Length: 141
Image: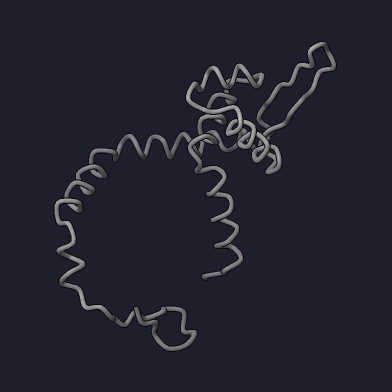
């Protein structure tokens, strides 16, 4: 059954874990704790600000812990939480799916792009679309 609250929750989580930088950070942290600059060097193309924002978001969502060791200078380590570790298998499955289906997706994109606007030009400007949820009349585009 369609539940708008669940849809929002799924969309919210997917926005976090589907982000390119999150996937990379979780992937690298899957090997164990890392310091900020170690992560930044390993990823290479990420800015300091983006890495900071990504790590804060992951920490806020309970996927990463931040441990400060009071030395001079302070040592800050990032590590996946138990919850964050459960994400590794899911991201692995998604990565495998992407690799396995990459060629088909690229072929579909190429086919779509060669069609250009032909499909849009021939379509009627206003079509009736059934809502499917039984809540009122069909939507009109």
